Image (cartoon, rainbow, N blue to C red; front, side, top):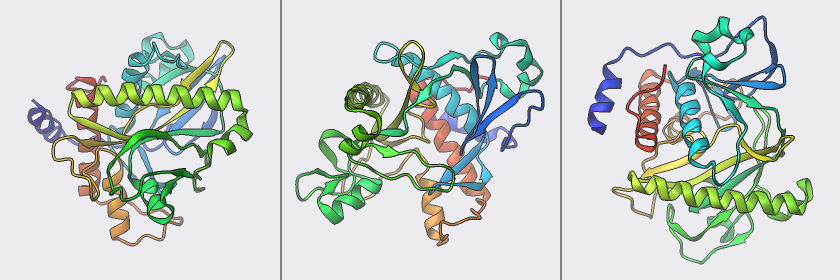
Length: 312
């Protein structure tokens, strides 16, 4: 079935990526690395474009369908996790959106969410179950990850004895996220909030990891964002997508080196090969990297959600 799905998407004409929205009758709230956000009455409209970022810069090429994949995967996980934590989603059905959004329905369909406004915590809640990425680099230098001591002799991509919580700052476009200690997080947002976010993040990671394992995927690490609405603390932005998470195929998993990945690692590897200095302007991507990245995102979506096609 997976091979059929891949062949189906490969045969379809590659759509033009949506790099930016322009809705002149709406109030633009902000633009992030991927999302354009509009203020709509008491809500926010999150529109996931096809922009892709790496090393904290938005690249010169988009990945067709990426915004639709991120939105629809987040919708799946919001529903999957609803018994663990509430979320900010009001509706992702364009037909239910307010009248002022209907002129833009064709653009919004499948890639937008109407969400509750939330006071966002200024931290990213990162959970690592495996030793990879910046965690591996930190461990090689210090024997720790973000100040958390780990056993000696661990290999790259090895499963940790227990998942660890390693928060980070949230950066603006072009700035670098910085790993911080739990104590530093508590100093920013208060100990009670920090402990609650840590506990919820760990519960989400364990539940998502268990689901991923049933479809042959390893959730190596991931990051979450939370906010407070008038009613409660909520899971916000995106959740457990290839943009925010590192997924590996369980088949062939072998610690001791980098693993094949369903996230942005394919893009990062290309940028390392061309020796980009990681400064503006960010380069564009060749067609084969764009195509391969799209294929990886689609396959992760299909495996995790059980859906063979994206909603349109």
